[in-house]
Length: 226
Image (tube, rainbow, N blue to C red):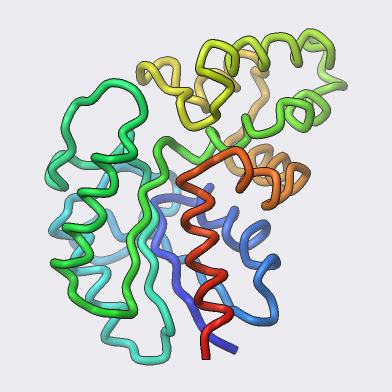
């Protein structure tokens, strides 16, 4: 079985890979998530994510690439929270083109055929807006939220962003996770987020989220290659 390591930013993404992403490519690929180190001592910060510098990210990637058992080393970050050392600029609308420029430049700098870099446009929780029905159903028994009311509010958020989950992020206070916390006070990024993602399924998320689909296409290609 080919072994692919996915270098991610936090515990939510780590659990998403383990519980949602990895099963979709078994037994063709073994996907191993590793939380990127955010401390000089080299230990990953497990309590929460957080932006990391380009310099530290390069060191982490090269460390993994030195381990020859990995078929692919895949770096997955979100553009919205990307450290400015990557050359991020303030842009309006969906920054797909700028994200591609940053990805391509970073891959050239790493210069290893086994390495791929993917920038999801926003934080993990944006993916959950691929299916408002699944979010609403998850919280249907909450005292403060009916399924019908939740669906209306979730759809209104999508309508305000051209029905595109990857557009939902106007400000740190209106990030996808903040919106979910506002609608559902008991929302927990790791436990609830991963359960909802499971209910939605990889196929639906791929259909709705362009940047995420590009990551999955890379895994498809790796699984199909000799």
